[in-house]
Length: 116
Image (cartoon, rainbow, N blue to C red; front, side, top):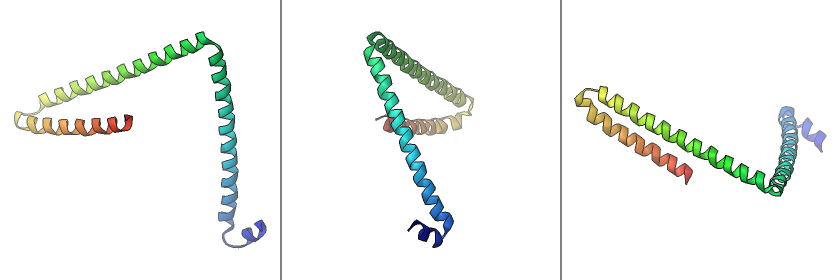
């Protein structure tokens, strides 16, 4: 049957199908190995209460640092926007201000949708 498939139609397409099957098997094996390693690592962590507490503290510290970094970026963006608006002529300032508020509302809405 496999020989008949190779002889009919495009050989390249049939060879490609065989290769994709091999990729699927290799990817499955990688996933299984990763799952086993995760199970082993979780077991070692669960066995050591002190290590588990340190990991929790480190993760908490990491996320707090990320949150502070994000807040700093937001503050810098706010200041940059204020500076940009202050450089504009008076007749454009109000229009640009409205456009910026609209842009930030839309961006913030998208961010919140991704988080929630």
